[in-house]
Amino acid sequence: MKYLWTLGLALLLAGLVGCASENGSVDTQHADAGDTTETDSSVEPEGGKSIFTHKMIKKTGENPFASLAYECPQCTFEQWESIDPPEGWSKGPAQVAVFSEQHSSLRSYPTVEGHPDSVNFLDDVPGDEYRVIAINSTGRLVESGPSGIVAEVQVQRDTLLVFTAGMRVHELTDPDGNVFVLFAHHVDTGDWEDTDFQSEDALAYLTAPTDWTYSTRILDEDLALDSNNHDGVVTVLAIRGAVNSTWEKW
Image (cartoon, rainbow, N blue to C red; front, side, top):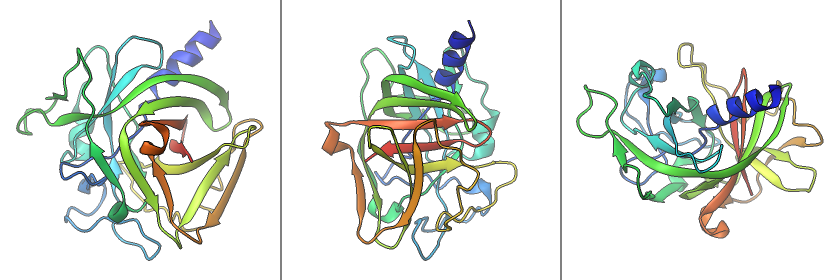
């Protein structure tokens, strides 16, 4: 019974990926986490404005991990927090992206038979403001450990996430030597403080899953996480606890 409760919680919290905007950039520019001025939101070594993501998750029922991730690029954290999820829906974590917005992109949107491409949750936003950007298909529970519940999920999306030379990356390596790169990290919407992910100790709090290894390094050359290299289905590690983080297999 305890295992089933843990698995159910992992699935509820495994709304995973994608930070989409209508122009195809991976830039949501959710401004009310601080500055409400629209600016270039690149996350580059020299600094700049941060970019954010918050999603609505719809369970589809094929298996315990199966769900759809919907994003609203123009919605604020306040609007997102005002949504009372209907039955079958939940909220994904509020996170800040740590890749380079200038060089990354969401190249297309998925279509899922039997489910809407877009959904209206907010009366004060015209049209169906939330659009499906990713399909969580299958997965496995890695552990429920010191950092929270850890799930590894297969995600269908058409994305290119780029970390440019000179940026710091944070990586988790599994027991088989597979490397997962941090691409989105927890943000407290009520008390936003801009974490410096260029700092070597930015993730000093993190306890890696059992038999996994955490490391960090400065890139000598660009690192690209391209879903096309995996036939459009990437492997994502979601850590959901007091601090949420999301990682993609390189």
